[in-house]
Image (cartoon, rainbow, N blue to C red):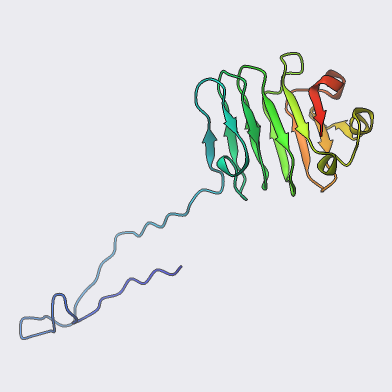
Length: 170
């Protein structure tokens, strides 16, 4: 998109120049504002149990997806998404790729939160294979490397805190 700011003379409005038109004319601009859509939309659920999956919640951009107090289902598709389920036993779904490098802000291993992931995305058929792909990063957060090159970072959660009941491989 290009912006053209100019002083046009004539046309349908206000009409062709006549004897009252003063030349040379002057066109002064104080400022021009240009807006672009954000590349990080915030997508939120409603109070209670929410199903925020598929095209309803994510885009090809870097999304921020938030649930609330219920048992939320959140799915980040393409892009580097930030997910937060809020209170409740939340499910974070990974079923199609490419996944990007997602961050789960409030994963609670003892609170019933779970990652439901396909074998194709995980690159593994069972929890022991999946667990070998999890490493703690420099900040101490558990990071699961995915088969498509993406990753899931569990903000504030160490690898040792994650167990087989935190993952459902389908």
